[in-house]
Image 1: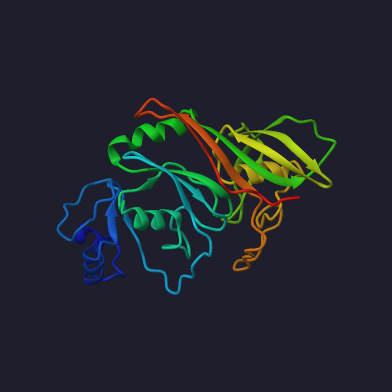
Image 2: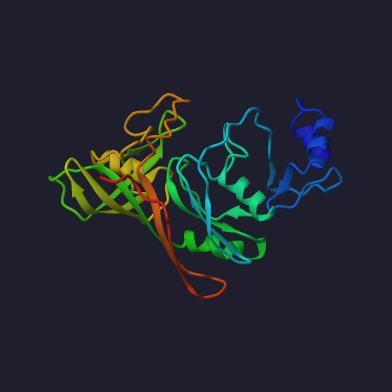
Length: 272
């Protein structure tokens, strides 16, 4: 593997890759550390956890709602990414949980946006991971979200939004285009309070930013959304104005125990 990294990334010295491996910063898809002596395997997925200078702490904490030998269910706060990306490494739900629980092989089974609070499921071990991934691939998981957004009395609820969502020109954004639908969301109203309403959102599919795109396309941009309909300049995070979107509950039949699982987030969106 050391030979491979030296050839694949010629701008990085062999000595630096060796140092990273010896520090346990390079792991394979099973969460096992890759050493300089590890044999090269074609098509193997390998992860390198880089250092991010001056990474500020996100001032909100996650909660573990459930843990067994196969599954961890976490309740994520707003603003905390699920996995490392961009300027976030240690301040991610995955790295926090690996360190807190002592589970280096922990892997997310699905993801939610950094701006969204609520439930995220993690696989503890490789042996049962595929079974949990299959639940999502086969749409055997019931996910319910809650959102605060403008009220429109000219729309008839409940309604279903079906559209085709693809990447937009900006790498941060998605948008709807004409063509066969690849994103489906059921939307209903829980309560109305003046110009705002509390909505329940049930995604059938799992496209990136699906709920935010669908709500904005209906003229119902979610309160606090810094992407839709207007992209907020990078670095302008306001911890006092979180996105009012919550992954509130998740329900499925556990593929290992055959028990029905139901979890509820302890987070709440803004009061009226």
